[in-house]
Image (cartoon, rainbow over all chains, first blue to last red; front, side, top):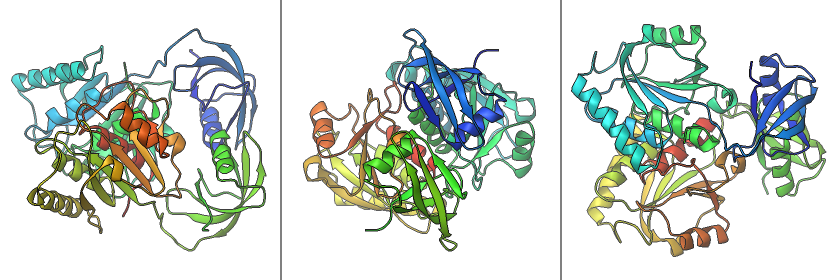
Amino acid sequence: MTAPRIRVTALTPRMDLGPREARHLHVLRLRVGDALRVFDGQGAEAEAWIAELDAGRAVLTLGEALGGAAETPFPLTLAAALLKGDKLSDVVRAATELGVARVQLLVTARADARDIGAQKLLRLQRVAEEASKQSRRAVVPEVRAPLSLADFRWEGQLFVAQPGSASRIMALLDWGAPVTVLTGPEGGLTDAEVAELTGRGAHAVTLGPRILRAETAPVALLGAIAAAGGGED
Amino acid sequence: MTAPRIRVTALTPRMDLGPREARHLHVLRLRVGDALRVFDGQGAEAEAWIAELDAGRAVLTLGEALGGAAETPFPLTLAAALLKGDKLSDVVRAATELGVARVQLLVTARADARDIGAQKLLRLQRVAEEASKQSRRAVVPEVRAPLSLADFRWEGQLFVAQPGSASRIMALLDWGAPVTVLTGPEGGLTDAEVAELTGRGAHAVTLGPRILRAETAPVALLGAIAAAGGGED
């Protein structure tokens, strides 16, 4: 198993973590003396050890710097329900700018379409290519043909944008695991769909009390991750 | 002076803060024994006192709960450079969904236009009205006629989206003050413009190493704030 990767404000000999990070270490079943990796989101990364750990706080001790590694962000996937018209192009374009590794299209109960033609899929892939060039990324995200929600699998963490949720993505984001962000169609996911996903381990997260359009939610959520240091290239 | 407002993970009798929050208390020139307000971003708010404060950490003691106050977020402004075609409509629509109180248009060195007609301004105001209704907001953001960057003033904090900046908005956001997010035109702000703004106290913040289109940057930054609990209504 690779050592968990924890984001810290700065790499200092003694790093004090707050209640949220301490809880995260507990969730990872780590104990005093366990090794992990710390990074500051600005290119510096190092080994570290847990020196103190209780319910509300933790203290880490800095170890050896990990040679010149630029921030190695987690692979980021957008799973997006099919949308009408050119809206999917807008979403793919913005998601590419914001650093996704791939876009997985989804058919959901309220989705505006049940499928997408081969031509349209190819066009979305071209949008990703073009956006990749314009945003100076080295990688072109792959746009994948639609899956039903039941057939959809993910690695690492899945965050579902859900109005009314009390959870915030920033409080849950594990910087050491792959991340997928899932957004629904116009009209949203059904309660049953959200329940099915959270039953499989997904986190429902809020973007505030307002109702967002289906094409705004993915940009806003991916923006939150980009502002925090995620996304590739 | 009203007591500073600090966001915490949860309202508990003893609240341990990490290095970032401790630094923030130092910046506010607070000392042990000083009063402040704490909130959890989910509607709970209370009085609190600083019990311990050193360079790397702080401990707060919980005081009286502040009666049933829903989260009272800071007023959020988007200051956006003029853009070509319908792009401004898209930005105003998304910004409204993401909870801005107003949109201030700006003329910048590389802006696609030097001015905007009265008709077009009115149309943007209608876009804000419509988006406000659709996203079920009680407030309609005001769209303000363009100012030059030199004439532009702000209250509280100003964040400028700037590729290559090492600072992250989440590390700097003061939950007790009004917040303005400023985004440039296609081609970006000039270095001189960014220097002038940071000289007046603005923070340049990153959205990652990728180049974002002028219409993506505001949605991404406002999305980050919304995901963290900001925005109105």
